[in-house]
Image (cartoon, rainbow, N blue to C red):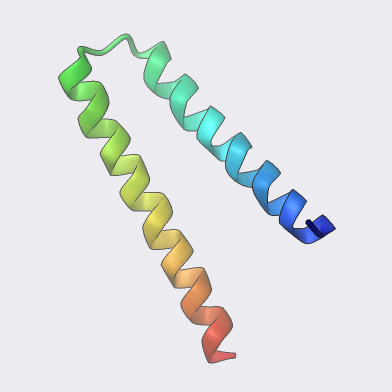
Length: 58
């Protein structure tokens, strides 16, 4: 594992912690919690795809 991989893993762990803590703090019913969790996953996936596409183009 390189330093870059370790930094990426740390960034994703911190981002995941931020999302989970925001969802837990709202004390929502499980149905809403899952719906918002899927929305966050979609946001991160979209950002990841945009960054990956940008890297491939340049």
